[in-house]
Length: 169
Image 1: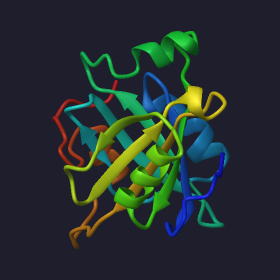
Image 2: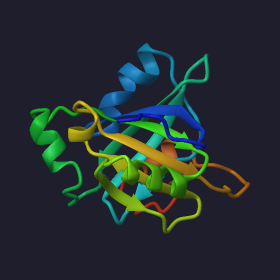
Image 3: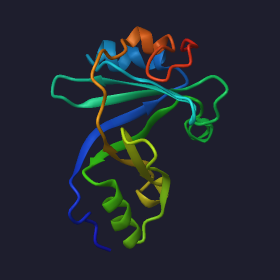
Image 4: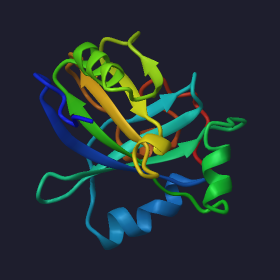
C-alpha cells in the first residue's frame, strides 16, 4: 500500500490532550513545561468539547481539551484511559482536504468524522484502527477573522469562540 498523499502538502501541527478538566492539565503543560496560551480557543457545542492551545519556544503546540457539561463526546476515550484522559489525537494540516480524502479512500483507508461544512476548519480522521492505535486528524485551515482572540481566562469562563457561558469545572 502506497503511503504518500500525492500532491497534498502535509505538516504536523499539534498534539491534543484531553482530560475531564483543562484546569487539571495546566499545571503540567503551562506551569511545568512553559506553554503559553496561543490566544483564542472556545467551544464546539455540536460535538460537546472546549479547547485551547498552548505554544512553546520552538513553535510546537499542545491542544488542551475537556468535555462540555452533559457531553458524551469523550466517554469512550475516558473509559479507555480509566477516566484520566491523555493524548487524544495528532493533528496534521493539509493543503487540500478534498484531494487528501480522495487519495486516502483510493488507498483503502476507512475515514471517520468527515466534516467539510466550516470553511475555517475542514477535517477528517483516520480511526485508531487504521493508525496503530492513534487517532489522526487531517485538517485544512481556512481564513480566520482578524481581531482580538479570547484570553485563557475567557475560554475557561465559557466566553471563548462559540462559548456556552458555562465556566470550566
